[in-house]
Image (cartoon, rainbow, N blue to C red):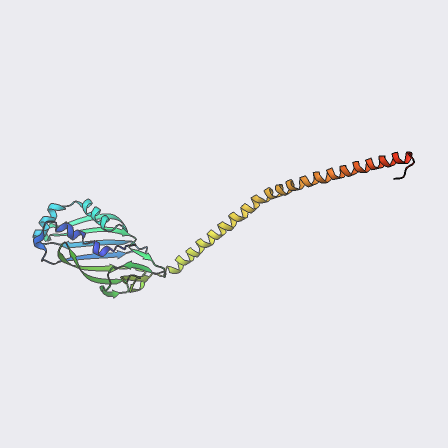
Length: 257
């Protein structure tokens, strides 16, 4: 399954700015992205960008303040996440704009019980400022323009032991603990216990329902045996009676049976 990372996809802002401006391909730009991840793995993302005069004019002609276009483009670039709470502001004097939104599910709990966030690069230029603050520098080519991205990662206040590791594909990931892993494991174990108890209770009720039916079947099986036994007794009595009557007749005739 293909993974999508938020950082490279944020170049959509640049791509929209450069439509029809091939003459600007030689000029490098800078972009700043702030990720503030909360304790349940959602992130508030703040993207800021400053353009040249030509790029700003083209941006205003193609995009203007059409936030819905920015939103649709971002949703196409990041199908893995649910994006919400979009806002757009601009500073015309400095030819800069700012896009803010929330992305749900940026962080997730991996198989080791640690929170994990994809960086989607093999060898990131990342600096650890503190146990909850990281800065990553990345050069991204967008529509022929080299963009220097500065990505700031802010982990939740409960995060600890944060470090950069590699996933099974060799891509870098940021992992950290929150101290809530034991609680999560306990809830998981409790849920499994409830499922097992429910299965046992269902089996017990089914057995209780089946007992009257089994008793009825057993009784039905026994009733034909009683009829057969009664019929055999009646036949034996009749045979004994007929034998006795025959003997009496023979005695009267003087014969011996």
